[in-house]
Structures are given as structure tokens and as C-alpha cells.
Length: 327
Image (cartoon, rainbow, N blue to C red; front, side):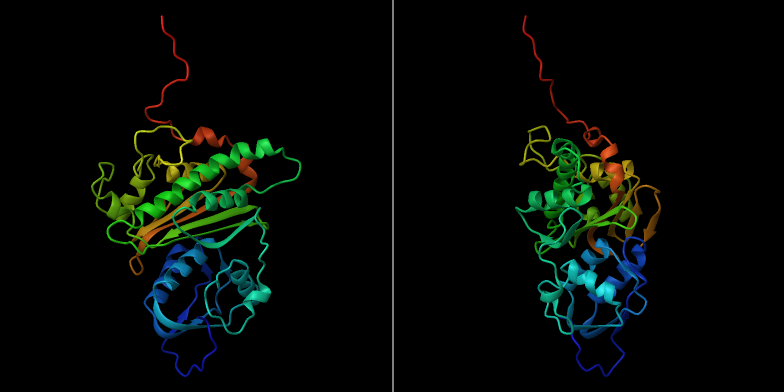
């Protein structure tokens, strides 16, 4: 899909922003919306691009699935960014000219600090959540496995909930072709973890418009409502966090709490709204509303072992104590 065809016109040039990432969500979604609406042969000028993160990767990959453009020519991209795209499996499934993708990729990967761009399908949410949790917490030498599991497993549970919600809610309102993309990376330069879960489905407002927690019929209020525990619950009569068949509706809530406790935040985008869960800052995507939900998780990896993640899980509704006495 990327080529070096003869380019005789500048009419279809789209310029990358300086940062295709959560650091500048408005620029990221503006760019990706331009790509989505492109047609024919399109030139992507990367002369200003300096940084890409998992959110930028996942959103751009999602739009490539839906654009009617037939071919993309990327020019002036810095070599380290090309290497990063290859490393994160961005070109998987694409026909590429100009670089030897197979030669440059790293099939072994680095599972304790990275999850390459992957499309999540039904039945794989548990597997992908496990991979994401490992990339978030790592596997440091000297820590007992039991200690590692004590905080990795609750993270894995919250992420599985988040993925299950994305898979089920994205396809509502007739969006049966919606897809979910994820990627994660531990940045060794500053110790931060960035993780993205992106779907191109119907968005929060379309699924929550009749919910009593929705204060106004806007995308921003729909994001705020979705952050309330159990608003997106799909569960049946079972209670507890151990069952695989029930969706407790706490994935987004718990993930936001984990991020905040580890000196981080979520950037949540749906429709024309984008919200930072830590600061409360919100942006309106007037030019490029996102048809679906895009979530970027950001935290300090070193802080994760210092927090009690199970304590961040909302209380189970309807649960009973284990002890019972008859007289």
C-alpha cells in the first residue's frame, strides 16, 4: 500500500503533524481524518514528523482499513521512525516498496516492554490483555513471580474488560464491520508506558444515549458517563471478578484509576470530544470527529508495583460474605 510511484502532482499531499500521538490528539485525529477521506494516490509528507506513539499507530492503522485511497507514498520520513513502524508491525498486511519489511522486522519481539500493533478479534481478548499487562509491568530480575502476578493479574483483568467492551459496543448500531486495534510500549528513556485501544465503531454516545447517567446528549458527556463504574455493564446474574462469561462494566473505570495511581492518565476520544482524565481538560474535534472510541493509557512503570491495584477495583454488586452461621 506504500509505494514510490511517479508523482506528477502535489494535489494529494497530506502533511504529518510533528507528533502523531496522545501528546497532540487534535493534530493526530485531524491528520488521520484527512487520510480517511483521501482517494487515489496520496503523498504523505513526513518532513515535520518527530514522534509516533501507540495511539498514533492504532488510529492510523484503523483508518487505513477504511479509506478508499489505493496507494500511499511516504516521503521525508526519518529513518528511526521508519524503523519504529517496522518494529511495531505497522506494515503487516500491506504491500510495501522501498524497504525490506521482512528483513528489518523483529519476529521475536520484546514481550516485557512492547506489544506490536495487533487487531483484536472475538475470542482473543484474554490473550491480548495478558500480553498488554506483561508489556506494562515488565519482568524485572529479582522479583518473585508471585509478587509480579499479584499486580499484573488485576491489570490483565481490567484490560480484558476494556477489550471485551470495545469488541461488543463498537459493533452496535449496525457497525458489524468495526474493528479494534491495540499497541503498547514501554519507553525506556523516561520509564513511561503508553498503551492504545482503538475501535472504529459507533462510539459512546450511540450506546449510552438512553442511560440515566448521561447528563447531556453530547460526546463529551458520554465519555464522562462511560468512566463511571458499571455504566457499560453487560453482565448477567453472576457476581465477582473471576468469571470469564460476565462483563462487569469496570474496565474503563479501573484502567483510569490505575493510570492515575501510577502518575498517569487516560486520553479518551469519542465522536467530537477528547478528554484527559487527570486534568479534566477537554478538546472538541470539530474538523475530525472519531467514529468510535480511542483510548490512550499513560503511566509510570516504576509506580505500578507501589500501588494496590485490587483495591482500585469497584466493589462487586450483590456479593455476599463467605461466612454464614445457622443457629
